[in-house]
Image 1 (cartoon, rainbow, N blue to C red):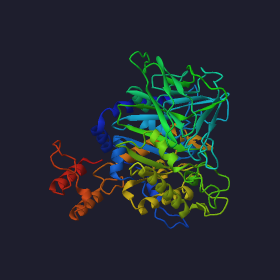
Image 2: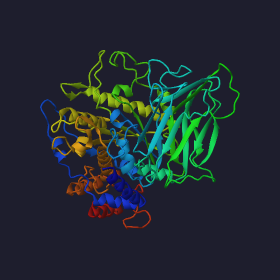
Image 3: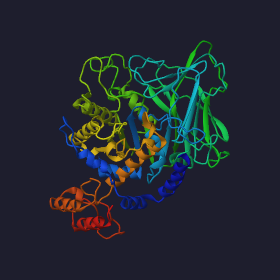
Image 4: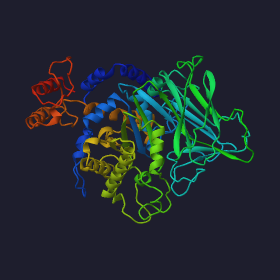
Amino acid sequence: MHGMNQAGISARASRASDGRQRRRAEGKRSSPFALGRVAWLVMCWAGLAHAAPPAFDIPRPLAERLLSGHKVRMLLLGDSITNPIFGTFYSNGTDRNHFPPPNGFHNVWTPDEGWYAINVPVVGLSGGSGAYMNWRGISAFCRYFEEGRSIGPRVNGSDLPDGRVGWVIETAARWTFVGEPLFRTQLRMTSTLFTPESTVGDLKHGSLASEMIGRGDLRVRHIVYTAPGMASVPQIRFSRSGDSPVTMAYPAAGATPRWAGMDFPARSAQSTWNPDAEVFESASSMDYAFAWTPGQAREYITTGTMFYDAASTGMSVICLANGGDNSLDHLRTQATFAQPGWYWNRNRGFHDDGLVSWLDAHDMTGPGVCPVVMVTVGTNIANPDNGGNWETVAGLSTEVYANNVRAIIARYRAAYAQRGLDPYFLLVSMYDFGEGFPNPFIDSRAERMYEVKVTDAKPERIGFVSMPALMGYANGGGFLESWYHTPTDFHLSSAGSIRFAQVLWESFQASACEADFNGNGVLNNDDFFAYISAYALGDPRCDMTTTAIPAQPGWGVPNGVLSSDDFFYYLIRFAEGC
């Protein structure tokens, strides 16, 4: 399976270089979806009065931006299914653990402008050392001996030296040195970027994204925490494959706490690193001369590394997803901890200001970026044990689930608004978990998510995708058993993560087809008559071009004027098909 996937990656990599015109051509050649699952969703089951949602409903501007990749910064909210740590092969090429969708994204998606960055989270352990490697094209190794430990997101106390609550957004590593480190040369966190030609044992763990990034203007950003009054280590020394190390001053504390990046180039003019034959590796240590004050505690806190191509205008994807997370875990703050309707003892959550700072440090909020928040919560049901209403009653999703998704949208709109940004949202209802068709629970989740989109004040900023409709159902309903990690573990396999990514990408392609005017993924006469009706009413969506002459300046570029050029342009697009 692994070898077949790698061959597919090479083919997709060659297609990615063809740019926007080739991508449009691919979209026109492919049938949006010949899905029997859509017909199934049209059916209603007893006790549920909502109309079935479409297989997908993605605003065309969002679909086009995702396909171009131009400064797209996607934040994926989820749980263990979408946790970015997993996705490793055994030496014989079979799956070692489950494969979250980001593994598929980094190996399937071919944005026109390529990939910008891959994030490397730390390893969450209580002591000793730990490592992971995954098919996104990265690995990490953290050493927590003597002075170190991992700390997680929580709102019922602080694991930070300044006492701030909720500022650990994803798992972080903390080392506290009292006086000079016992082992200054000991490596604390090692971060690795793989290219498809680089090997670890008998395996190739590189991805399409890591190949693109590693062959660009590769930079390294080590993300650390600093705060007023916090005594940090003075410097950190970073090794570089095939090159001399770099020693950098720890970011100075400002007036407020923040997550900050320590940026340096992966290679100098003297570098001997060969991305066609070697992995790129950078590791942090305290290996430098400094007058350490006996008895004084100094801190080093990191939430991981980001490898990025400084010359790229492409896409990046990061995740906020921990095993067991439900919708309330993505909403909880210090103020709501243990309050009625929020569970007694669940402490996962974060502070809004900490979230914005964490996004800043990952280049998710910079000038010209297009933030996209993918919401996949719903696999784990939020039925609080201390009062409040439940998300599921009698096996069906309630309006409480829809309201929790609405609250997530509101929270992230407010967070990005602090940086003057209005994010898109992509609501993805999760796939069937072994039940087969009909699956009222899974399908009711999809219905509630679609309800959120169509009732939102800004539906044009929200896309919706139904994974049951696109991937099918278990037990003969189109969802292959090989897409599960095991027959009894319904996390995705490597093949499942690929399929998840494929159907999403195909839904973007179908949604970007201009001829599919009603946006239902099927091109037929309904689209033609829908355009004519909208054109007669002066609908601004009908403004599609400046000229009706192909290949001339202004072809396919709206000019704010509805004219016969737009009508004939649409006729040409309709005749070309999708």
